[in-house]
Image (cartoon, rainbow, N blue to C red):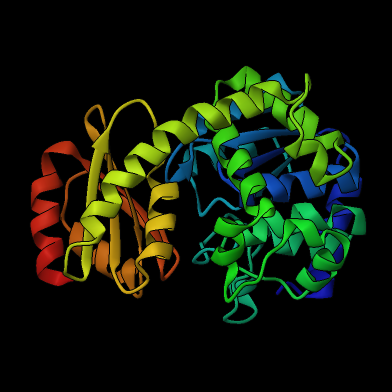
Length: 343
């Protein structure tokens, strides 16, 4: 958890900013963290970061396009040196809030990470809600936390206010896969995988929406968001069915590979991890010359980093039980063989 002093510092940064830009990781934790800060401060624009694993210098142009005077980075584990160099050159303040493995950052960056205070690494959505604590936005906070497999202590308050959106649960993914709040999280996740114009419209809608019921009820303001959800969910279910057949086979490793125009390896890996909690889940998405890897399971971070060690142009990182990586397509066979040997 962040200290009260750290949270006050972030509030002061939000107060100083006249026109901030919020760069956030392209998932519901990043999205909900942005929404909480935007709705709290009443200003700023959001930009979903699709580059992996870092925030690249290509995104610096958005600062000029939006005429931003402050940069907030939310739930992004890595930021490229080139990006920071450009920001420093233009003397723009930076606030970076994250909960992944702590990074070394330039002196001018205001970096906040609960892992620097203690071993707990609450989602960035949680950190932002505790800092803002606008009770009317508790449902947004719950969505981001549940997506990141975390049940916050204020979940009971949410249940009292929205009992029809919750469910009985043993862990966070019971809520995600068995409740309406989980459906909203999926709508957010799939909505972020749309063309830029529709994502911008979704952010505008979510910045002003009053309740989760307005999200669930399809209308003219959120039609594109619901339409995208239906499009992706149809493809998602087909891929999931294929992966489930592999999961039924004996063994500790579930390795699933697919290709196409849709990068949903993280979503698939999460659900497979929920369905097969005793297995190590590895989902590989092939796109062009690169293969994106999403892995879930006990100790999977060390396993994946060990497996890709020495691979040319490989990258990887994340949490102890949830990790992402990228390798060249020609290395997939070698990756799988090493994985089977190490797992």
